[in-house]
Image (cartoon, rainbow, N blue to C red; front, side, top):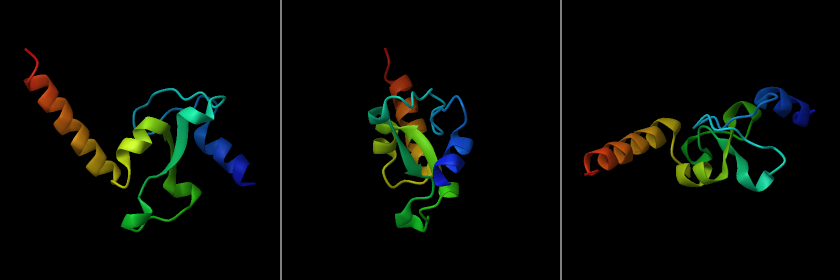
Length: 85
């Protein structure tokens, strides 16, 4: 039952919920499920609180909220753009 619910949630053309990048479900080493609200911040282990994401993106997000992660990404991008010569 949970597998069917997960298939419905991710759809036929799964993408990383944080980056929009396509995910190839035939390569499980490249993706993972992420707690959208980290357990360390009160999130629960439920299908509603999980998003499919690229493995490397999930590694970088670690236990940050989506908002915290995006803010750090914006800071890195801003710094990178300002230091390009």
